[in-house]
Image 1: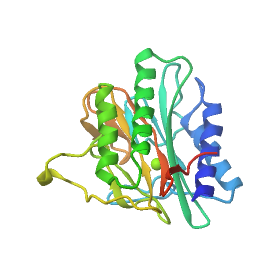
Image 2 (image 1 turned 30 degrees about the vertical axis):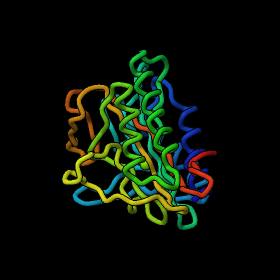
Image 3 (image 1 turned 60 degrees about the vertical axis):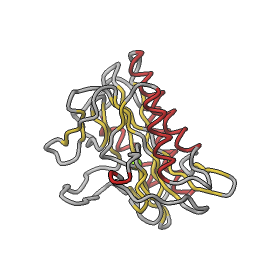
Length: 248
Ligand code: MG
């Protein structure tokens, strides 16, 4: 899983370097696919078709501005100065998965966009810091929610992090919030154990947290058009604390 995570990190770094006004999201997708294939890895998203979704047609999801997650790369989607773009990549390598996402500025971005990205990164770091023995999934979720709320942002409630291993989506779900009321608990809680591996992925929203899925069957946007940011790492729980697997 560390090797799968390393390959994902390299793909992200190559894409980050290519981001500029005038570049299409399809061009970024091609970069990621090339990195994966060069490292004998396969994209997890390509052909992925859970539930009622049509098969996802690309290696990455590329979600611009008010697009929260699952944006489909396209030659006609060209980046503009001031955009922010969330990129998500997962790969299979020797039977194991790595999964990570980052949101990047395109050229100069507004102060509010910068602040939203920083807060989302901070929420991810808070959740990673909470990924220690003695805690449960609910503690990780609460750490994300608390960090986001302190910065004044809402979190996407319908989309969660997830266990990662031989498949991209395994138990447990790792939400970005947690209801204090037992009757409202939507997810099973688990005590953290050494050897657990999961992806934490806060999605922060500058406005209201109401979301909409577009007719393409994938792209999720905010109903009020407000800006969103998304960061994700795959993490292993160890006796010595959290180990981030999706680093170069
Ligand atoms: Mg992901």
